[in-house]
Each structure stands twice: as structure tokens, then as C-alpha cells.
Image 1: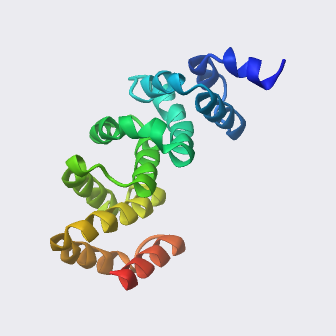
Image 2: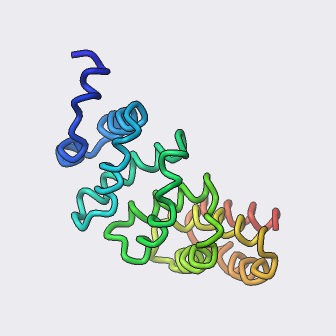
Length: 177
């Protein structure tokens, strides 16, 4: 079966329920990029109350957001609104990663700043979420300089905590600020 014919017949939900690996993620990413109307199906999975679907859909969504941001941009605000009630860290990690690359919509900058600041200060949060949050926080603080002092203070505290990579990101960010 040709790749195009295979893509035209893909059932995204069934594919997400079969396996969770890079091959499946890439197949879904490529399918949605080739069939942009299917992004709605994938986003419905992301916003689902089904833990498995929301977790597994977030990975291809992140990759689509990085390679074809115009497909994910219309959903960014809704994705931000989902963060406080996310069912899985994958939703948070991949949403914050998208915000890191695409930027935060102006109308939700305050909410995103509060959420990402909360992720940064929570030592129980996954390192990737905390690290991606730093970049998002800096981007917002650049637009709103009154937030820089609070961010610098917290980064000073964080510079000696966490993994080597996290501490390195904190130190490099402090140099930039």
C-alpha cells in the first residue's frame, strides 16, 4: 500500500490506541500535515477525558506545532486553558514546548506566566516542563519588564537545584537577563 493511500485511510484514534512510539507519532504527524483538516480529530483527542488519548496525542501535536505552526496556532488558547486540568504531564510538557517556540498569545500571557512560574518553582515537576517554562517566562518578561525582577529572583534560587542541564539553562538565562 502506498504511503499516500495509507495516510488517506488512517484512523487517528485507533492509531493512538495501538502503540505509543516514535514511529506511530511520526506517522500521525505526517498524516495530519498531509491532511490538515484532520488536525481537528487529533485536537479532539488532546482535549479528551481519555488519559491515553490526551497523553499520546500531545506528542504528534507538539511536532506538528514545530513544523507547521499554522495548524496548531488556532488551538493555542484552548491548550493553555487546559493546562490547569491536564490529565497527564505530556499535555503540559508539549504545550509549554509549543509556547516556547511559537510564543504566547497576548490574551493569555498573564495566565501562562503564572502557570509556568508555578511549574518552575515546583521541584516535583518534570525537568523538561520546568526548563521549557523558563524560556516561556523570559519571553513574556521581555514584553513586560516589571516581571523580570520576580523571575530573576526565582532563577537565582533555582540555579543550584535540579539536573545539570536544568542548572545550565538557569545560569544561561540569568546571563541573558
